[in-house]
Structures are given as structure tokens and as C-alpha cells.
Image (cartoon, rainbow, N blue to C red; front, side, top):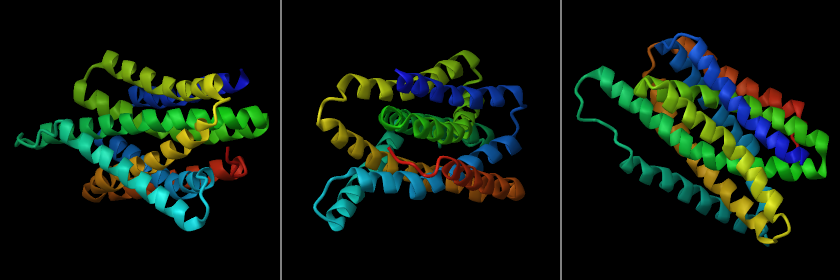
Length: 256
């Protein structure tokens, strides 16, 4: 049960991120910073954390097959979000830059939410599995995962609130996302005896890889390039990179 408790606490980090947004004034500098921070975090996570984990998780006869599976999963994950892109209104018809910016932000918020829910379910599964086998490692990994959930919570809360101006809706979304980690833990808790769990976890990880790659290259990167506050963008990005490195050092790069 400790594992389930941890997965529940993990989600709270997203709520913390949302609180930070509501306590600070919503200005463009802050949003630029949080976007850059998320970009730094996501970029590092992709290479250092999720890719090796997916590689370890896939059971194949040799490295080439593993690489092929990961590539296929990544492409599917990337395409899934690209497909979703068509369904989420982009409001490119609006000529005014302000409404265009807001539509764009809402877009990123929604895309990130979809990827984040999936990501958190997988993360919850991984953390729960790890905690059952090694409680200390589970706690350290949770801390690492939790810390990078803060900037993501910030990005989602700020982008969603900026566009809807509806605090209630924003909090509902944040609550929903924060519970997804717990849901992942619960899935493993209920079905841990089934052989297929490992397969599901590996598949989900490769999909997550593709989704985060999409968010980084198609959503966050263009935003950072067009940003007016170059210094803020660079410092945010570097902070994101450092955050991931620190959390990985702290939990001794332990994989579940």
C-alpha cells in the first residue's frame, strides 16, 4: 500500500505547480520561463530517463529489434499527438495576435495534458513497481518524478487559465491529471500478477517518448524561438536541465 500512497502524493506536485501559477501574476515573462523550464525538463527526460527505461523494458532478442520497437512506438506516439492536433482547434483564423496567442497556449495546455495523463499513468506504474521491490529507491524516484511534475503543472495551469480565465475548470483539469499517477499505481496493484503488465508498460513508455518528443519539437521549441525574453528563456531551459540532472543524481538513476 505504501506504493499507492506514493503515487497519490506524486500527483500533488502537479497541484503545487498550479498553486505557484495562481500565486504569481500571470505575465508573459513567467509563461516564457515555464515553457522554457518544461522544455529543458522534457528534453533531458527523453534522453536520460525514458529512452533507457524503454530500452530496458522491451524484451527482444537483440539490440536492433529493441531499437526498432522503440522507433515504432515513438513514431506512433508522435503521430497520435499530431492527429490530435487536428481535432484541437487552433483558431488560426483570428487575425489579432492576442487571441492567437491565447488559442495557441490553450492548444499546448491541452496537448500537454493528454501526454501528461498517459505519462503519469506509466510513471505511477513504474514507481509502484519500484517501491514494492525497494522502498527507499521508490521514495527517491518519486522525488525526482515529482519535481519535474511541478513545472509541468505550472505550464498546464498557466496555459489553461490564460485561455479559459476559469479557475474552476483549471482546478478540475489539474485534479484529473494529478490523479492519473495514482491510477497507474492502482493498475499495477490490481493486475500485478499478469504477465502482460511488462509489455503494456514498455509499449506505454515508447508512446510517451513520441508524445514528449512532439511536444518538445512542435510546441515548445517554436515558442522558445519566438520568445521576446531571450535571457529568461535560456535561464529557464538551463534550470530545467539542471533540475533533471539533480533529481537523477539524487535517486542514483534507479529504474523500475
